[in-house]
Image (cartoon, rainbow, N blue to C red):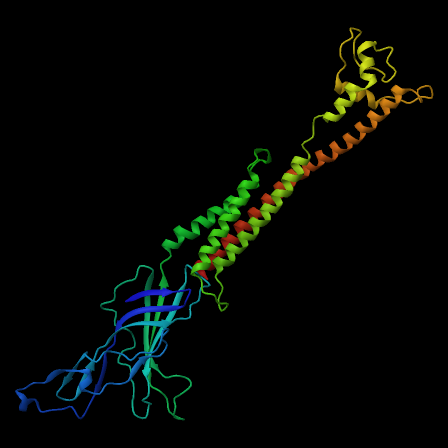
Length: 391
């Protein structure tokens, strides 16, 4: 039974039964002399047993079996020992295709002191008997293999090896849970990352959406990192994909700041209030209220009737731009006032023109970023899905 495969600590926990058989020539008898008794049960402390242990254990070495465990002994000296054990073995995982990954883990059993000179280990079957296997909810048991094993570093005696056996287990993850809880939310967030640039700038929620998507990617990144081992032997494609989306989300926030800056900096279509106040408080404006159009020296035609109507402020700004200097008016106080206001208006119109160009630039930048992020998101998503499923 597969209890658990801890990816972060790279530990496989299993529950299994071993079937170990050997022949002891000193434990034979004639069955006819003992009422045809051909086999008996003996405790482990009454017969010799091999000193076997799990070689690749993760939490300390311990000899197999317990002293009170019974063994089967027949009259020909054949002994069968079936110790049950719960193992926690080291399993080097490959997380490149997480959560569509497959893992190969091994459980190695060997003798502690007996070398191949005094103990020979042979494998009775090339695979594990899975008749009573209890399925795991996260992992599928795909294939098993059993073979003879001996450590590469030999033994304490030169030229001799420590005999043992190795069981190799191939596990494949069931990805349905991870597709629902991880893959689909990440895909939806990547679409929201694109929709940031489709949201109108005037709504005021553009920056809120961009920051929310960025924080969501950060949360999913931390969730994935919690189950990943801290190793550089293999890097998860999903983690790389999340890093790419997180980077694009961060750039989306930065670009949104630029777009909002250009857009609101250009929000200046109406005449500035300080110019309106200067116009209304000027002598020219007061003169327009008390004199007719023909007596006005500061403009050529204002469109104001002879009915002493209050002149339009916008019209006055246009008229100020048409005022022409003359030698007779050079020292006129009204002409000086007109020239000051005209200078202010010229500067304001230049700024307004730049701001209008800035708004157009913000709209074009928003569209360009939308196309770029859309292409990058779709391309990276398709590539990652192909690598995870078919690679």
